[in-house]
Amino acid sequence: MADTVMTVTGPISADDLGYTLPHEHLFLDLMRDNWSGDNYLNDPELAYKELMLYKEAGGVSLVDQTSGGLTSNDQYMLPVKHPIAVRELSERTGLNIILGCGWYRETYYEPRLWRMKTDEIAEEIEHDITHGISGTDVRAGLIGEIGAHFTWISPIEERVLRAAGRAQKRTGVTLTTHATRGPLGLDQLDILEEEGVDLRRVVIGHPQSHADFEYHAEIARRGAWISFDNMGVVEEAVPYEQEKLLKQVKDIVDAGLIGQLLFSHDVCYQHMYKAYGGHGYDYVPTRLLPRLQEIGMTEDQLLQIMVDNPRRALTGQE
Image 1 (cartoon, helix red, strand yellow):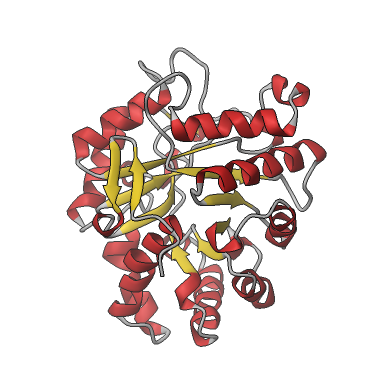
Image 2 (cartoon, helix red, strand yellow):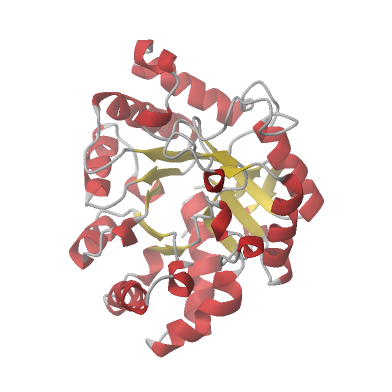
């Protein structure tokens, strides 16, 4: 359990986190998925404007889960190193920004990872937390997002996940994962449990992409967090997908699992920005509540998900 959280500008009291988006991205390069400008976020001025909309809506904190491999080595991506760019954005907006570390998924790994032992990878992750990321003095405040590609975990992804688990045990920070289109989060929990990680400090990412209540409930039963981190879909998707997502939320709340539920947007493409017609970083605080009220949720419940739950997820506090 921790009373402070490490942000890109230094530690803050957990009580100062306030309204928190637990899974977002500010600058990243997804070109390895598809060579498209939509996959490239590298405009500090636009990022500032988009974040200020979130701040004006009452936002206080944001978790940037842009881990290793998602930051380009291209000299044209940013004028400074990625952690420095994030810190400058935090200082300019006044938002608390917690930056992740580790490695995303196999497609995005550097070749050297295949030659490294698990403990060597763990030591690098630990260094990002205790000293700074990429040779800077900007320290990571959590581990993640640590991912796997489709519905399986490859051998190298398992090694990285085990390394992340070992670093989590040594540092005590929260560990977040990337798991899509299937119940892969349970396999991730199995591996982390073998490494002795307290699953109450683990956030399973993207479970809404596998619309199975039993999957969501099992994550919670094992003590981990259910991160519905693409809530902007309620705004942008076809009505059927909107209703399906809201039903998933209702099932979790009706089962008494609201205390392990997180909401975010996972802004990771240009089309998600308000400037490009998307939902932006402020959809949850400004426009989600009316849709939640349609399924019987209250403003107090939304505040629990957006204020109390992220604080507990990031610190281990009760």
